[in-house]
Length: 177
Image (cartoon, rainbow, N blue to C red; front, side, top):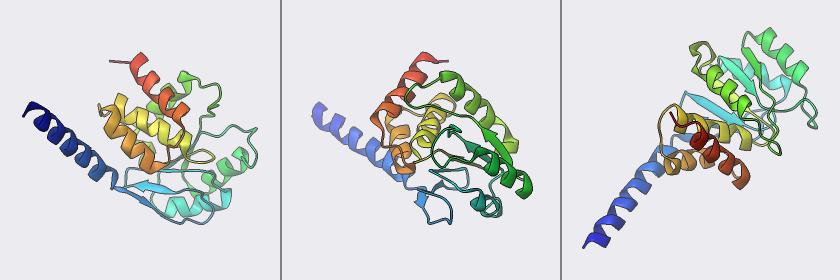
């Protein structure tokens, strides 16, 4: 009987987490790779062209948070920043190297996303992996979600890298409040 109760509880919790992740919608946005929107709170995406910036402003985003390194192929940080300025959208560049992750970049992200002037935010990298991992950290660290719930949502937003998921979990463990 106890085992059935435990299994039933696990199924209900898993279903609730999955239902919450259904708030993520994938859309086709010109100039944006792997666009996934979480209601009106955030969008995570991959590579984004400077030409897409004005459209992001029209969609209602207050900020663009770019996690790409300037040295990445196709990353034109200066042109994206100029397009953001021209469109009247906040641009924040927080370069993050997934091969050599720096927790200080996550610290800066959490400060940036906590600023109401930056919300709703459009968060991107090259594929959406780093963006979704950062959002997973925010959900666990700030919103106090458990790892399963945050992981399901992050996967819906584009997290496919086991190494980045491990980094996210390790970051939260090391920064327990």
